[in-house]
Amino acid sequence: MEKFVVKGGIPLTGEVEISGAKNAAVAIIPAAILAEGPCVIENIPEISDVSVLFKILCEIGAEVKMLNRHTVRIDPRHVGIPIVPYEMARRMRASYYFMGALLGRFGRASVSMPGGCDFGVRPIDQHIKGFEALGATVSLADGGMVDLRAQEIVGTHIYFDTVTVGATINVILAAVKAKGITILENVAKEPHIVDLVNFLNSMGADIRGAGTDVIKVHGVEHLHGATYSIIPDQIEAGTFMVAAAATKGDVLIKNVIPKHLESITDKLTKAGVNVEEYDDSVRVWREGELVKESIKTMPHPGFPTDMQPQMTTLLAMARGTSIVTEGVYDNRFKYVDELRRMGANIQVDGRVAVVEGVSTLVGAPVKAMDLRAGAAMLIAAMAATGMTEIEDIQYIERGYEHVVEKFRSLGASIERIHVQEPELVGKAL
Image (cartoon, rainbow, N blue to C red; front, side):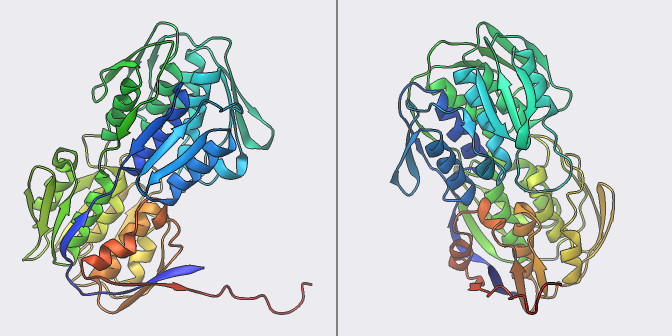
């Protein structure tokens, strides 16, 4: 077991390079299955979720070769088993994108119910609605496997009951080689959906409207291999922006698309943080006090739910009372108990957190409850006085490349230490 030990109170200063987008990579990698030749994908983040996807690809027959640290060559021509092993799929939620990709290529797929971070009910009913509308039969098989079969995938009109990133991506993957046109309404508009569609179109797909409320997928018979570079990670960039603000630092965050950060930039500036945008970078610094601000997470272009824990942590140190409303997921405030250990004054009622700002947080033993909550714990630890120990760091490393090294390069004091698992003493009764 490993944990982070962080000495707080050091302003972050310097420059940091943002990696490829996790949320784009975990959709684009399964999408390579649909190609009839090798795909070269650049700007791949070195994170554990990506490693799991590569293992799944190899397990079902694809050839995966790293050309360098951030470039992979995927040859899907020998994929012959449209079954994703249970033990691998249960480790991450994005494994469900193999449902759409395998269904789109083979007309069948068998994938276990997804795992990943646990912050409330995140059903796949809209995925199933889309698959069935395209002509697939969906059943739950033994061992928690979702079984999908279709004689033929046929274009149709689908209206999603809720705005859902996962279902939007999965149904696009299933429909890209369908007969006819598939019209998807009330779709998600996140940058990583646009990135996936750009990747598929570079392979010969005909998909229009990504980034708007309606996406039209004109089915094609063949998709060829392609070379494609993944967009920068909006959430990693936002995390470093908040960390710079929380530590009263001054950081230039490079390799970003500033337009993707607009909702984050807006809330930071209203909270008293300085943000200056350049062509492909942003500078974030703070000189004075943080001030209260209200936030409600919403689908893109609203404030992203994946930035909510980090921003709530920042507001825990702001003057006044801030209101944070979680508009996307249930039960995403489980990390608040950990912040309270560090002296935060936060009360949660359902999807609303009332944050009474305190002058400073104090180091304490805490846990990473999930990926983004873990990032929030790191921010809190770096801003706090004293030492903080963070357990369950595997969640953080699911989505942040070389997180220790990057924060250290900005002056943070973070050590990764190995902790011996306690041995059970005595006999079982």
